[in-house]
Amino acid sequence: QVQLVESGGGLVQAGGSLRLSCAASESIFDFSTMGWYRQAAGQRDLVARMTVGGSTNYADSAKGRFTISRAHAQNTVYLQMNGLKPEDTGVYYCHANRLSRNYWGQGTQVTVSS
Image (cartoon, rainbow, N blue to C red):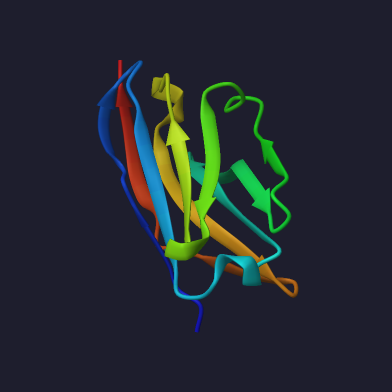
């Protein structure tokens, strides 16, 4: 059973930074992609994603402010978020894909105050 455990969310003022972590129960190189999604107003949207080969893509709203990275030895994927805005508020979920199966973490709340 694959487990993804997020941490690092919290309350921050606009312009601040947070780093989210996603610890996987298996090697992160076992997954074809890993990434982060944000859920707000009932909709879950991609924020950033990284392939096993290291290619990344970002939502337009995240480009230039957020960076996805990984630490193989820790089986962990990170999302560094700088220049946070109130519209970044939501529950952030870690996602992993392997052989067309999708895995999700429990989510971590990020709240950005204006």
